[in-house]
Amino acid sequence: MSGFLKDKLYSYPFAFVFLLLASVSAAMLFSRAFFLSSIFILAIMAFDRRVFFIGILLVVVMLLLVRSQGNCKGPFSGVVKDVRLSKGISVLIKNDSCGFYLFCLPVYDNINIADRVGFKANLKPIDRLRPSFRRYLDSIGVDYVGFAYYIQKVGHTPLSVFVKIRNVIEREFHYFLSSRVEYFLDSSFLGDNRFKGRIKRDFIKTQTSHLLVVSGLHMGFVFGLFYLLFYRLLSFVFYVYSRFNLKVLSSLLSLPFVVLYFFIAGFHIPAMRSFLMTLIFIVSIVFSLRSASYNALFMIASLFLAFNYKILLNPSFVLSFFMTFVALFLYRLKMLSQIHKYPAFILFTLLMSLFGMPIVGYYFSSFTPLSILSNTVLIPLFGFVVVPVAFIASLASFLPYGFVKLSLFGFIDWIVNTFLRFETLFASYSKPMTVSISFYELVIIYAALFLSVAVIDRLLHRQDSPRQTLQQSSF
Image 1 (cartoon, helix red, strand yellow):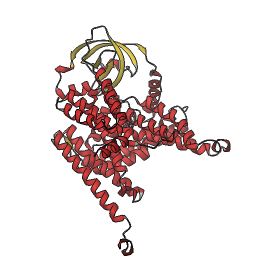
Image 2: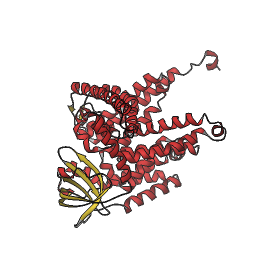
Image 3: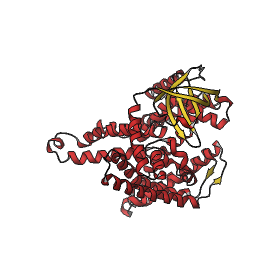
Image 4: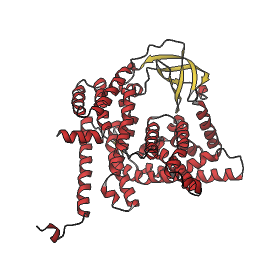
């Protein structure tokens, strides 16, 4: 038994570190009973001193960074972290000691992310809010919520230069694209939450709202595009390809573009997770490291928890990391590698939709049976059509005004509008159903799903393996 545990600790060290941090976080957030599971996991980690030391170190970091509610007194100031527009304007502002979630007057729609602002507001602690909203604000580090009747810009941060680049792209989108396409690309590709409320209804009905969040699909495309471009160009230069590893060189040259896109698209949880995963993938190529996707995912999740244990309350954090874990689990199935790539992709998308339904029902108390079909159709269209087109539109924003730019944006507008018509079509037939799933029911459902898929994969793999001949099986 000890040999088995040592082998798993060696193969997946950060999986155990993550479980330890998640148990400690759950003990502080939900019930002290989770400390028992923390002690049990720590006892298992003791079989590998390296994993045990890393786990203890990150738990200490977590406990040192535990933040109590800030005691903020006016005058108030801070850095804008997020801006949203729906019926009004809401702004997330943070300083060294407090976080503020403020509702503002429409005249302050010129406030941007990364601005330093001073403000006057009527505030109240978040413990007076309804539990669901309070847990969400707690998970993103908010101490007070209120109405700001005065906000003034007092400076900028170094990240403001990337916000200005995004503003240039958004301005061109506004001039050359129809409103619905503009709002969709601002949300789904540029990571701007301000206009998401105006278009998200259809995406919620079809349970494809994850397309409105910058994720690994976007980061992967940006890296893949520039990697293939540099690899192709460098392969024509004899001096380069005869002396250097083109994979390493192309990865290093692609990295600045991935970083630039990350800064432009913002710092939301899915974007940060996908950026860090891409960064680890690039490092593994450069240093010829064996790719360990599970360890990379659990390491990133562990760092998130260590620096903010309350992020376990954030649905975006849980959904982002859990569905990435599911994607890695499904990607390793042998039955997917034994069929043609297009049927394999369709089966992969179907299974992802199936695994996504229970957790969506748990968090949002509803699910749509048609979501499996809508995800199977819309995700490939988004990844292989919309994302490349959005990237071309971003580059075209810096072209001088003329026939080429006007024609290019007209074609892009038609392409994205066609995609949105498909979204509307699926939404018109989608009938959300109300469900109520407890946490323990969710655990049982996923245990059954993972076990069923693993058993089916093993059985199919055995059927496809070469049969023993009579001569081979005889003594």
